Image 1 (cartoon, rainbow, N blue to C red):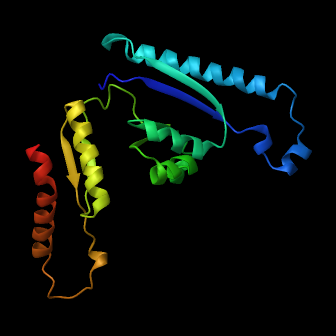
Image 2 (cartoon, helix red, strand yellow; image 1 turned 90 degrees about the vertical axis):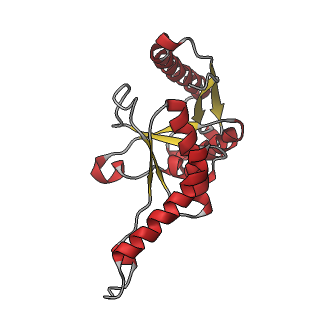
Image 3 (cartoon, rainbow, N blue to C red; image 1 turned 45 degrees about the horizontal axis):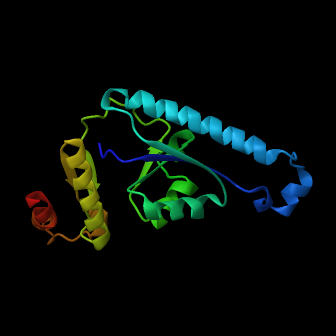
Length: 202
């Protein structure tokens, strides 16, 4: 949609980055660097084939690639300084873990300098979600303002609807008879409308 280059990155932990105990227990082959390079290139070739198959109808996409040997999270965070978006997978195992983020995606969500897309292994594949709306959670704090901006941008690029969600829990309030939930809901509706008004006008 954006017609910008895609960079496929494979990051390997350097051999000297493993603990001394591991190094003493498991001797690494002398050609471990060449083995990692070959594996990284194979991964990139597979990814490039997927990109080309996915974009066949819309024209070729410029695909760049890098194989790096460095600490994973700091390297990815540094790469986000120059990116419009970073996309990572999340290999959820089991019902509980599928609802959670892994260590890499969690670190990126907290430290990346651009929007982060986390794709779970069992996420639906195109075109099943091609026309699905973009969902944004709005809680009224400054962080949700940036999330709202990104959500409107994504919905605009995709030509889909935007759903803005603001939630309240009755567990957050004392169980007092004088609280009128209709008034609480009306105030929340008004706050949400105010948060979205400027973006809708744009």
